[in-house]
Image (cartoon, rainbow, N blue to C red; front, side, top):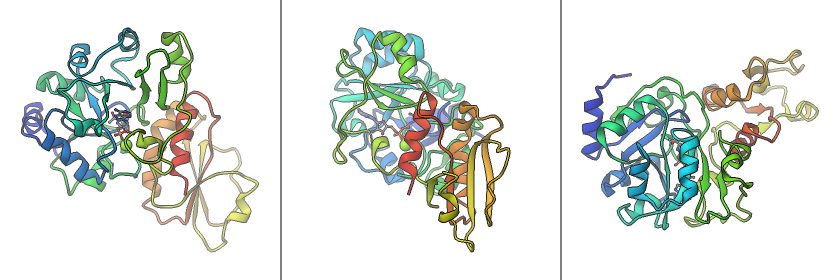
Length: 321
Ligand code: TXA
Ligand code: MG
């Protein structure tokens, strides 16, 4: 992977070029959020529909105030969780081009924690719109090589900051109605963490439309998918599902004591001892790796549906096919 000076990358961003950058969650495909043409390139390169709004990454709370109207709750959350994997949806100011928010009156913002991204934000002083750096609908990249493989022919700058430490996209919390904060996308900061600051339990949207810019496409039924069919693992159903001539991968959360007795299967695990932080960190990377190996199907064990497990299951549910 080519190495760049910070100044080169800042210049590229100022010139309206796209740059793939590491964040603590997943790699992002960044452009100057205030440059309409630059932002348009993000949609072109990803094959992303224009109804899908982007998260804007900022350096500090002052920059947040330039882009959005912040209720008192936003300051409290920022204090506790920024920099970090929490995205806030807030009423936007007119300086933000409509293309960034897909025409919505709200903007999604966060301060990322990765030192390279922070350095670029500090040096360029630009707000950077950045979705995950993957073709629309595919797994989010957690290593620079993932970006190179799927988008390398379309973008000039990929900054390698090593594997992402979290590996799962940020939690998205809407503060559009501060009396009723809503988790639009579960993530590394869970409802319980948020409640400690909100003083009440955040809710989840009850009805999600499948069309229009009202939703987070992270909430679309199908998203984050490998090309190989991916299915939930259940040991009872497994024998009937397997064709003896096929080739299958089974992914466990932790190293299994006893591997299932099935022909033509290979066994993998996401963590030695089932630690969910490690599971999240390795999930997309292992799926991307297995997606290249001509398995007929991949089966994966689901974690308990709470805390980080809820976010992992949310992504997996959308990836199953
Ligand atoms: O961890 C992350 O959030 C990563 C890194 C790169 O920061 N970014 C990421 O971006 O996951 P993306 O574009 O793959 O997912 C962003 C989600 C989308 O589902 C989008 O619809 C939602 O954020 N979103 C963005 N702006 C919104 C808005 N104004 N209202 C509601 N949802 C919004
Ligand atoms: Mg994405």
